[in-house]
Image (cartoon, rainbow, N blue to C red):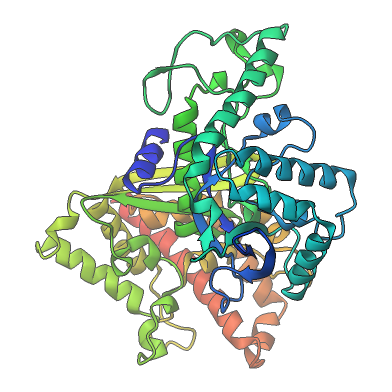
Length: 496
């Protein structure tokens, strides 16, 4: 899996050099050519309800061990949150925050050897009057203290300082000073790492000296992860120190390969990730060209109304995903889309737990097999609607998985509601992507009692008479009946 993630980073030209990463920046502090504050501008698509800002591909970044070795207040360079950069927010007077601000400003001064204009920026952030103006502008724009900030200079043309390259050499040299501090700490430690010798890298297969800590993966905070990121490989307890190995020597990966797989995961989670009942599923394909969105079988498993066009009937759109899967399969088999025959798919299911990335599932295979499976899945879950007048709307995966749960209680958190699902979530996901996979007995054991209790209490008839509840109740019934049908259809095929 790691080598495939590294290949994904390379194929997509992702920044994977240690000490650099892509970051979303919401706000830009704009200065004139002499470093005087002008205003604060919002970046990204300001019309979006949840504007993440603008993505900068190559931002300076320190790992947690580097921050620890950097000393009191050690922070990142050129891009940081508004709290650190401008002492903005409720915790601005906290000594820890002021120390971080001072460190950030000092880094700008040090880097002015390579970029002289950074000296004026540092002086501005040291000026109480200028900081007050910056904070007022951030408040006026309703900025959050946790949102990232960077700098723009208006000397002739606007220029984002982080997009320049003159600071790169200085930054690499600065990181080496932190690395020497880490090496000095290891040398003086009573338990020296055993892997000063060369070890095969799990990602590349080359002989390397493994990095002791892996970089954190971001984007899993909505599925149990931390907002600061989560580590895919992390070893702290003595029980993981087999053969005298410490920390991530137990999963040897070079610093370069670790940066590459982190870049790949961050990109996949951000651009190709979808939440599935408390987990995050990501997928990608390998082939000569990118798979077009309309030809993506896994995307077809989501809400079919995502395919709804302005001039298209809603009822027609509810069947569009199934139709597209069938047409795509036909075009591959007839040779019309023979270009897709050699493509492969990869699907990864992730979640976060106590600062660690949990790999819940991994699948890979031929693209044609995937299309066949998705087409078979749509056939398996196809049922008539509640009134028996026509085919029911095709339920998406999220609807099918949550149909295994009782009704969500008022004010109940989503994370608490979906906890009981456990492995059944993966069972349904795998059954959709592989036509040979059966639904587990536990799926059947969940659906039948839930539906029986629903009928016994008389709630079903009452809900169906309520026009406000009717769509949700019918959707739930369709999803549960689709699961029951799929369970029996798949088992009947298996027994032949």
